[in-house]
Amino acid sequence: MVSIELHPEPITSGAFAPFGDVVMLEGAEQRVINEGATIRYHDLAKIDVSDEGGRAITSIFRGSPRELPFRLRLMERHPLGSQLFWPLADEPYLVVVASPGEPPAISDLRAFHVPAGIGVNYAKGVWHHPLLAINHECDFFIVDREGPGSNLDEIPFPDGTDVMLHGLSV
Amino acid sequence: MVSIELHPEPITSGAFAPFGDVVMLEGAEQRVINEGATIRYHDLAKIDVSDEGGRAITSIFRGSPRELPFRLRLMERHPLGSQLFWPLADEPYLVVVASPGEPPAISDLRAFHVPAGIGVNYAKGVWHHPLLAINHECDFFIVDREGPGSNLDEIPFPDGTDVMLHGLSV
Image (tube, rainbow over all chains, first blue to last red; front, side, top):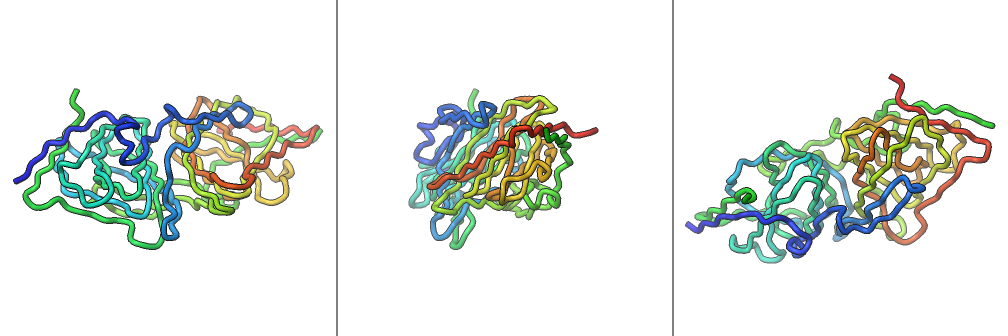
């Protein structure tokens, strides 16, 4: 049995950069529009969905909460496009990622704790665990890819592998 | 002086159809994913941004509240792409629209009251008033177009025109 205890770190743009974008107002380009009535925080993530005739679509994911510690069984990736999650609930959530390329070893996994009001955009091909809502059922606004081709790879961890995800240490 | 009092109607997909999509969970295709842990409400709006080499971008608009009744001074349109607004605050908002084509007469305007938790996606070329938050400052998640070409036309109402937008009648 190979066992790992995965503890999330607080997300930052720098730490998450190998995996995609942290989607947030802080640091964004601000444009004042609508005769001063609106601030536009402009172009917050790299939407990268055009490979093989793809196009951007918008969806909402309703995620059931995971009870922590939570045993991870698999990772997935979207080889043809980015996938953006914007949290609609006033709740934090967790993400588990690994760099694009070969299926990750469990020692390659990185876990992040994302506060309410901050989104993530997985870059094309980045390995990630499916949505990890915690505490409550949570909705997320999604921007990802629709189009020809196979855009989902799922890789279960090998038998005898035990990956336990914990909450943020206080 | 040509004067009009504009009273919003409650938004419905049918009434809004000439202007774009009402973005909502109700009626959406539901897909159960992530081994049952997530419901995907799939592809909620027609994201139409590829004209003239355009691509989808994501932004956040922070809208100052308008005091009602509010005098409208202009309409705008994006001739090259759709523009989606998803409300992030737990607040209703108003939209004022007119069909694509020639700049609208004030008698062509339609106003809608949109409850919290429901978005709108203006179809390409649809005339609309800039963001109309009410009650409080409100953030909206935006999906629209970036790319070559001129994607904003603004048309002020003629002098001597008075368009007053009211709140939803109770």
